[in-house]
Length: 447
Image (cartoon, rainbow, N blue to C red):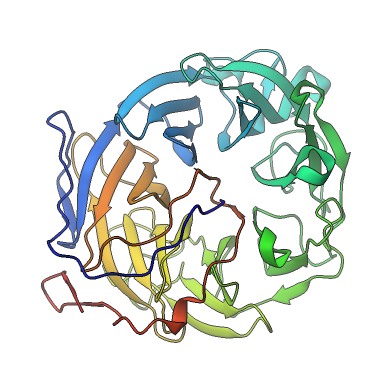
């Protein structure tokens, strides 16, 4: 995510009110008054699970277990739905010399999946050896309406998620492949204890291949997700039973066998992480299915100091839910003066958490879709160029406006792969602007 510019908070002259297209679909919801639904691209396909999102300019790709959807963030229109079975279809994007590439993770073996995009869920298989494919698929998305599969790279135990690392010195991209034992495919036996690195030559992505398989420390079975911050040469790896910080000064040889071990009591599953844009803190997300959303519940975020991995605080959204609620995928808004985390909380909806004081996080905005056509269950929520984009497992895409008492605010980016943070931004905690707080009972921000 290369920021084009960084804007300090400025006073607003009028309240922000999002433009509401007449065709926007709306759902009954509970929400703070400063978090408004802008538009939705509802998908009512029975049984479809929506997953992650990536952005390049005005093009957004939203993965789902049956394939992916492409939409235009400017026109707010769905461009195409590509059926290409391969749970969970984690996505990322990169453009080179006018050619837009889409990378798609597949961790459920697919019959003939290296060359065929099946539209059928029956293509999911149990372990079936070389006749089935799992790993990374590469599409040419230069024409967003006509995605073309150009390469499939098999990786051991498939690819649950992947993280894109540009390596311009070697004219290539590197993909860190996260997978772990317990999946149905071959080469998943315990102890797994490794990641795969796929190299993608920028001028010939059709020749992408596995570069190496770095080993992990003996105490972790594998990693679920990896967030890299290129400017500080660090990766925050979420490895099921602990977090780890790796040195990635040489991105082709990450320091997986000599990490900083990050631990905390009460974490059920180390799922994902987000660095603050000044590189001072990292938030780790606990994906837990053992309790409901409440202020004392599990499935919390935990804020750590990067320099010494010290735990600063933990936080759970305060709204009770009838089912499980834990933090899943999110990112941090690149705004001066504050640390603001946008994240998906499954049944808890999309939340914005202010942790400008790392010891005292507080929720300042939220939107929890509930009702037609189905109850919301949010997988990913990301800030991108002035809006919050949520990929809801059941609903599809919901897009929100966050109304704050300051505008303009935050950086703009030419692209967003949420697990690839690129440039340092000015320290967030040096601003003299007031920290907003949630007005008791009203749900509005007050300076």
